[in-house]
Image 1 (tube, rainbow, N blue to C red):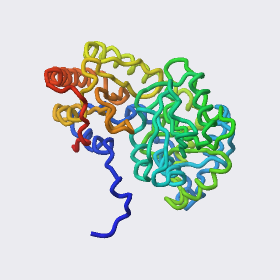
Image 2 (image 1 turned 45 degrees about the vertical axis):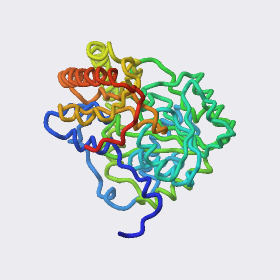
Image 3 (image 1 turned 120 degrees about the horizontal axis):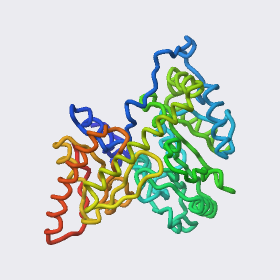
Length: 398
């Protein structure tokens, strides 16, 4: 056995990755990963790729695509320009690059509770310790905790679906400025908006702190393109470019060219509107089904954007939902237990995340009916057990 780096002991498998392997099984209904509807993927029949796009290119990315991204970011109120846009191999790469720059062993990282589980996976690999906050409680982000990094998804948060109000965005910006941490804003769902809400980037409200802002084309175009992008304050951007160079030199040039053609085409706006309208209908149908099947055992908020419902099991708030995943998969349904979304390993019991964008209407009804029966039986058994305390089991391997 070779001598491995000490951080390898913190290299945990992703529950999402294991579930993605399962949901390809015939007949499986997936509410697990943030999978877009296959019907939403753009047609690529008439797209052409110039021969020069097959050559190596600049680490920052396709110039025309960066110009388009910079124009959109400027409209959102973010201080940037095309030469401060970095095209990523998916927004997950942005999380990795930021962690490499900022997280030393034992460094404090402030995260929402709950938060994106793949961000926790990366931060923990580099040795992060955590202080947690919520949209209504920013007191953990202060100079005393001295966070090196504050990571947040203010718009259609994953997994909760919460969208910060303008007051909450201002409070978060003020808290970051007060502790002089680097602020990392992850914004992959902002285009999937179904009701009027504030989507002002928190980065645009900062007065003194350095920042990184990133988003993705995975939800609005296609995840198989594996393209995201970031911009950052002037002091951080050159370092992120160097980290990108060291990681993979540059993102896929063919995919960048395809993305630019799609985003700059005359029908791009109409296509996005059609996508949003379809997801709004799926969301509303899913909410109706949840009321039918989970109304007696759980509560949730109707998400104003994004791809997820977050359910709290009011009938059994201390139920560990992870062991139920294997049983659900055996019955042809996949979901995400709540526990992996919390930095505190003892938190997250009695919660689950459900994606509404992937399953058809018929699949959604069949899957939620199956889950409701499974959870109702588990809740009944849990409530008759002598000890109702939540004891989180290790991640359930599938």
